Amino acid sequence: MTTFAAVDLGASSGRVMAGRVGPGVCELRPVHRFPNEPVRAAGTLHWDVLALYRGVLEGLRRAGPVDGIGIDSWAVDYGLLDASGALLGNPVHYRDSRTDGVTAKVAATIPEDRLYARTGLQKLPFNTIYQLVAAAGTPQLEAARQLLMIPDLLAYWLTGERRAEVTNASTTQLLDVRTGQWATDLMTSLDIRPGLFAPLRQPGTVVGPVLPEVGVGTPQVIAVGSHDTASAVAGVPAESEHFAYISCGTWSLVGVELDAPVLTEASRLANFTNEAGVDGTVRYLRNVMGLWPLQECLREWGEPDLPGLVGAAEAVPPFQAVVDLDDPVFLPPGGMERRICERIGRQPGRAEIVRCIVDSLALAHRRAVRQAQELSGRRVDAVHIVGGGARNDLLCRLTAEACGLPVLAGPVEATALGNILVQARAAGTISGDLSAMRALLRETQHIVRYEPRGDDAAWRAAERRLGG
Image (cartoon, rainbow, N blue to C red; front, side, top):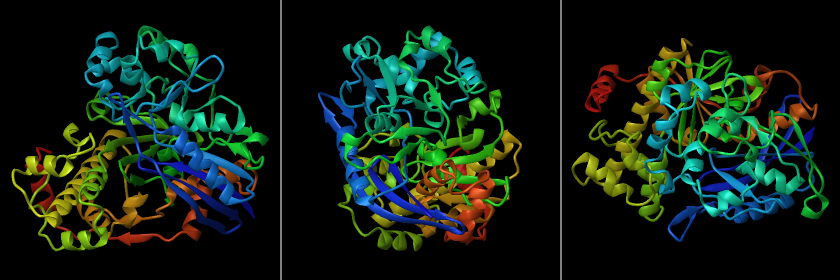
């Protein structure tokens, strides 16, 4: 068997996992977890990327000798390098307000239907394209000579190699969805310099050995699905192509896996995105707010006992209150309980707030799964929930009821598993396509099945309350 390190950076924490892979074996063990806490300075919200890198190095040292390292993270954010390769300041956080109003500015130059036809990307105000337009004319961007997405930046610090892995590149809204190449004409029309963008590489490409001076040995760094959702979808233990996935954490990424993008006007208006996946697949999905509102409430409440709160929420009658979690009012950090109560129109207790969030998230899952089938023409027979949300028994049960489909929950660590399986295949430890990797997951991982037993009429009534 071979051992690989999966570096997985999320919006609230990072971790390093060690994975052993061999015939009939796919095991993970946590090595190191560290916080990912944004920092506001001079009115701008930043990622503390040097603290993240320190956490990565500590995790790699604790992992011991490994045969490969793969890095995945959230999407859209980037670091800028000067002519010497030095980082020009901490990357700006996608929740920063600098992109307020920028979508309209871009649409005045590139109409939204034309932009979607080229990039296939969901309109989100924090997409990289809007961040770069917002940063136009700043001394930092003027001094920059290269842009690297977060996983590519860390890979550069480990190996000295500068490339752009395609799954994360596809979230910039600057990649041509049909050709898989940078859309340089879109860049120039927005006064974004094409020379900022590194050559592309595919998941499974060997980046190079870790530099000796880094101090963690010299294993190979291997490009994986560096957008964490790309690795998570690779880690879905599906038996056939007729599945929907929900990668559920801070965000819920809800969609289906396709061979080609869906670029219809109906798809654009429904705000579905076509992002690159492992092995040339297309992740056709919608971003749903996910567990972010619950995470923010828990933070405001001083991190109370979550299982106890969820248990109390389960005893609350359903649909006492529901909110539209796609409302941009829930995007910024801070004051989440107040904003939920304003939408509800009263001040309920904490258990009812939790039940409101979970009911509302299950409704959002229902809507996205239904739309993904209608817009793509792909029939769905089961829904796979992976990531942290797979631990939430109430959410998994309600999602099965809301969708009217079996829900298979797990693995919780799908992102790390997808990461190490792509590494293992690149190293020759395993072989085969995505189906073969998923068969290994079904053989080795714990999965819980939830059958739909709810009242569909009640879910339809709840949808009508939200205008769905």
